[in-house]
Length: 156
Image (tube, rainbow, N blue to C red; front, side, top):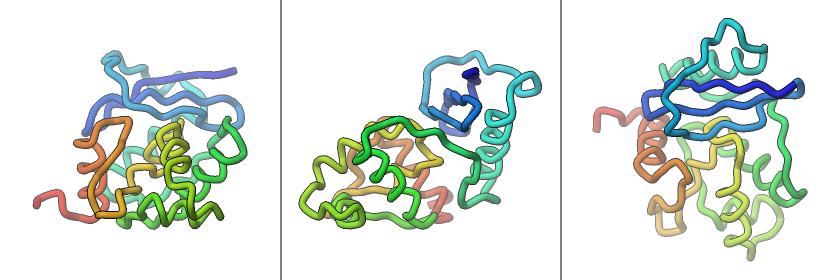
């Protein structure tokens, strides 16, 4: 049985969906009506607690289960995203090389864009080869905030 909740983060509300196997979706939303955590299932509560720890700076990786649905290529890209260390960035080219498709930067970008579980699968850590912030479904200002948060440069 799938469940969902709205999580209030420092950079906006996040819709979290989960089923028995794990978190299936984590996306920014304009919905402003947060659900109470107490009545919700395990994966949602664990995810919300881990997001609390991430945003307060005490968590650098997630271990809540995720249940990914996508093509084999997309799933390979999403799994590779989880290899990018906290506080680091990779270019789309480096990510493409990591999945064994060094000339497929555009296809990797498409898979990155379709990541259903942002933050946990850190698509915000992928930048252009020139070091510029490009492409983030949650908005570039959120991508910039997340990268500053992870690098410890929030006061900069």
